[in-house]
Amino acid sequence: MAEKQSILIVEDDLDLAEMLNAYFRVQGYDVLTAAWGEDGVRLCQEKSPHIVVLDIRLPDIDGYEVCRRIRTNRHTKSIPIIFLTERRDRDDKLHGLELGVVDYITKPFDIQELRLRVRNALNRAEQKVLINAVTDLPEGKLVEEQIAKIHVGSGETALVARVKNLNQFRNRYGFIAADDVLRAISFMIGNSIKEERREGDFMGHISPEEWIIITTESRARDIEARIRNRLSQSIDYFYPVKDRNNPVISEQEKLSLDLRRINASEEASREDLDALKKEVLSAQH
Image 1 (tube, one colour):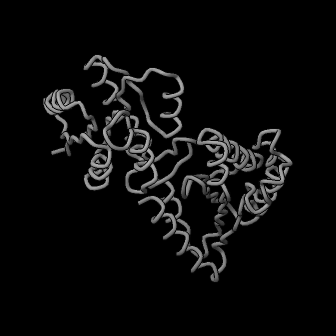
Image 2 (cartoon, helix red, strand yellow; image 1 turned 60 degrees about the vertical axis):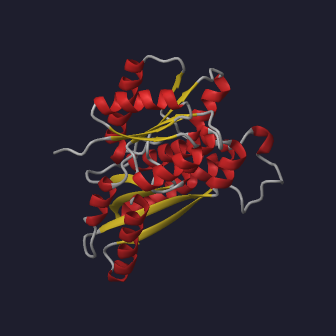
């Protein structure tokens, strides 16, 4: 028998919470409810629901803070969240979207519409388990499977790229700007591969801020050189014009890309390969 999908409803209007509880149970879901934001965060961490329906206005911490805590916990960060609220202001919606909510429904609402939005969000979440939501690149098990194929003597080389100081950039310019950086770097890396693409090349995410390219040793060197060149020419354009020569942003805080190669043709790389496989597993679980 297939596992029931579970919904966590965080809503301080007890009549509405009970109505939603009864309705979604009839629809075949397991339902958890919380009237306080702190309880919602705790239940999310303890029970790992498939989706959260979250009111913004709560008695203790607001829905934005609940969402922020869910998103910063590695065990709950991928759970889809739908905001359910009376607020209609555009800035409120943008704030929620910046935090990673998948949908935003204002009260009063049509219960059938909410049911369909919950269903659609769950379907999208299932489809995106293997695809990064920002860059549309493979991650998770798809990357694990590719790395598992690499072994000493295979002739393959793993090129690992990691963007540094993205957290500082995100804190200064916001989530949307940071996501734009990830998309831009993914595009640069992808184009660097496509210039002389060969059958069997692979590109995906080890973690949201780290990429892996699997190719041959000679191609890895060329790809690395192209990536370094393109990023050095583009890095300043990630910043607003007024901040491009801003002394407040030190070189140590500035965005940069760390690149390393692991050559599977060399016996000395065995430990590096094992470490890479462990890194992927720890990032995805």
